[in-house]
Length: 137
View 1 (cartoon, rainbow, N blue to C red):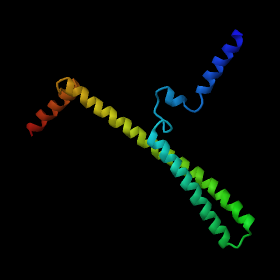
View 2: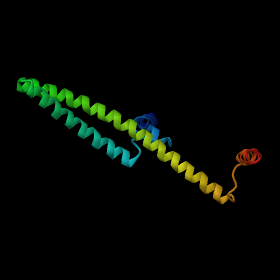
View 3: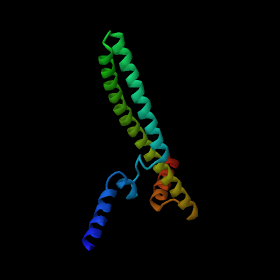
View 4: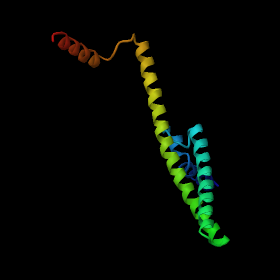
């Protein structure tokens, strides 16, 4: 019986490596962001529908049969669904990274404020050297 419980534990560990592995490890992901997840789903749906409609209209205006029209509309819908998905994920990846940079910058400002508002030693030295060289001109 101990063998079966060990197999269950191994199976559970393998199951977590799939979809949520990046989010579970503390890494930022589009799938882990609530607004991004909803937006990507919405864009995928609208992209697929738009592609289907455009494909159907183009095939119908070409005078194709109903079967051919629906086949081409379905292919266009699938293609535009995938294209919309890729574009939405690429855009939201940049948005998520920008939000993380903003949070990091706000945290750094907060830490500097708690430390008395002093800048790091290297930044102060470079700033004072620039002031003294600019004043002599």
